[in-house]
Amino acid sequence: MTVAVLAAFVILRTATSTQVSTVSAEAANESSTVQKEAGQLVEETTSSLPSPSSAPASPPSRPESSAALPPESGSGKRMVFSISQQRVWWVDASGEELRTALVSGRANTPQIGTFQVYSKTEHATGLDGSKMDYFVRFTKGPQGWAIGFHNIPRVNGEPVQSEEQLGQTLSHGCIRQAEADAVFTWNFLEIGSTVVVIS
Image (tube, rainbow, N blue to C red; front, side, top):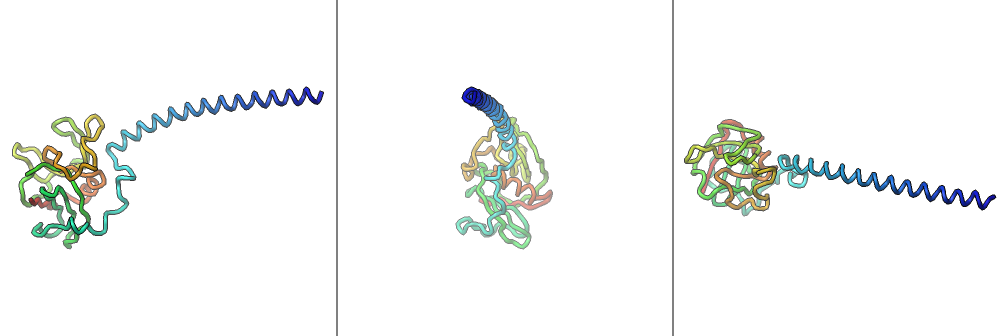
């Protein structure tokens, strides 16, 4: 009798383990589906918001010496854009460089000079249907199209260039920025703020 009870216990225990394995496998499949759906949602969300890895916790304390703010780039609070270097600088009212970064603009665009921000749009659509965020306009091109700073545009949710490509002249005329830099510019520049464009 003891042997029969022990055999029944082993059979029951084996059946229970199999059920647990089956349930775990089903739960794993369900979990994979949830993770995939969540991953798709995250991809769609992060295309317009900075990811933790790409958004620095704070700006660099000083720009690199090789990327020092060029002389004759204005005074007071301003943003400076160098066409030849494809680089911008944010400068506070005391003239201190807050940070610097590579951008992607267009060769020989816009005209050299001092401008004031005249418009800001948090979510904008380009003439080609591309989507961009944090659009800060400060001048216009020869055909009257707005030129300003914004993040890297997206077409069908995909960025038209990578942040690693910043520093190259890849835009139609505006100045494309890394997501974190576009957010910083959006908060730094107000309507009427100064933008200085140098060669």
